[in-house]
Image 1 (tube, helix red, strand yellow):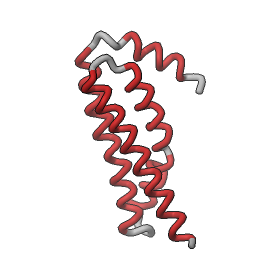
Image 2 (tube, helix red, strand yellow):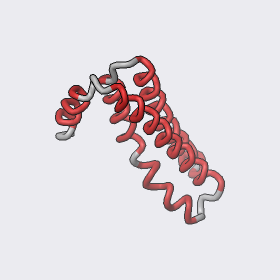
Image 3 (tube, helix red, strand yellow):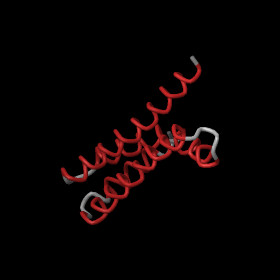
Image 4 (cartoon, helix red, strand yellow):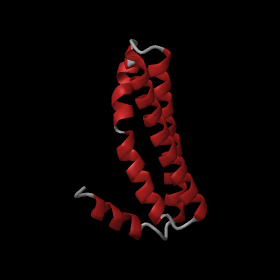
Length: 107
C-alpha cells in the first residue's frame, strides 16, 4: 500500500510517452493470460508439478489486478486504457475461476 503513491507519480510522469503505454499495455495483456494458463494447469492435472508452480501465480492475481486498474486510470490513450482494463479483468477472472474450482472440489 505504501508504494501506490510512488507508482501513481511514476505513471503520471510517464503519460506523455506513448511508446511506453503501448508496450506496457500489450505486456500486461500477455502477462494476464498467464493467469488463465495457470488456472488451466490446476484444472487439467491438480497433482502435477505445473499445477504446483501455478499456485503462487494464481494467488498474486488480485495484486496484479489492482496494478493494472491503477495503470489504466493513468493511461492517456484510450487503446492503452482498454488493454489495461482487459488485463485486469483477465487477472480477476483467472483468480475467481480458481476459487470457484477449489470450492467445488471441497463440496
